[in-house]
Length: 417
Image (tube, rainbow, N blue to C red; front, top):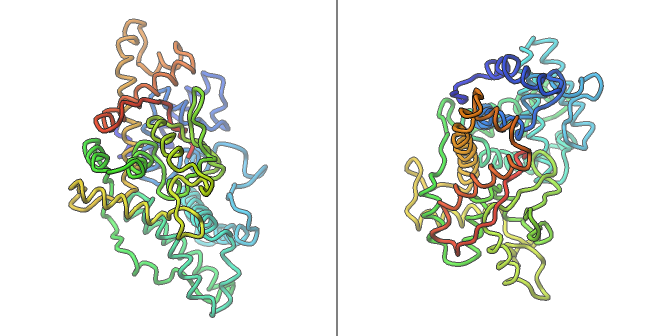
């Protein structure tokens, strides 16, 4: 199935035609229960998450809740904006109510705009410590600083969103919201009014670029020391965002036991963990190298930064330097760190597909229609996890093993974030 060609309407139809009956057969309520990525993967539908992320810039949960309408009824709980700023939430909801009542936007359009606004506010909060988007808008003296704050959010979008077209859609939503505030005298200026001039985003120019396994291996191969190797491992081997890697702290690491992982109290979509699929020994060696009385716990410490660790921009700059030294280009340009995260997701999807292909023979012997049926009906959850771990471990070993010290430590990355 070519997931990437499906519109949101087609993906919603696929849910009701195919996914919902399967949920019903397994005792789930397809009108309320939100299927997990793991459940979708077990049934052979992992591609829907990839399509939502890369083509529509939605998480699976955003899609199932906001587009399909699963989860709690809005009359019971309302939309979870994920921010602690009542005035901002009230302004968002007032704006969306206006769009629905006066402009008659399609029901499928409103959830998308709500997702755009929520992501803007959450990113603003992560960068600036507050999701209050309103209090500075009545002070012209604060305008230059507020413009800079909003441009910082758009810098994050530039790094993380997949295509120029999607970046422009986010900007258009946010700009229209601020225009609404100005029109109704709730703001004296629009801080993103001229933001498009600061970016080279072109409508209709797809940006589905990612790095190949061979290219990631070449970048890893030119890393001179443990710190540089850990930077490439963190980006491409664990799928971390550049800001997450820059601020990584020893207190987040759980390196012992059967499930070595990194714990995050806050990520883009809430708390989560990233299991260390490869390179636990490299992490342990790094902490040993840094351990002394003056160490602040940062895996990438910086004495010149007030945070005590390097910045996201430093991660990007170091990665681009390594890629340049390795002679790696993507579409004629030196790749940025964000392409590593895309590589991770692509590799994970391929690993799951490879795993299901290996089970086709078992499915045939059992008279089952597909390998996904074998996965869900004949294998325990622990066994399914073991299959996924091994498949992804082999994918990453093929990338890093020639340069690594033969270390193989596996566990999958939690896909909720």
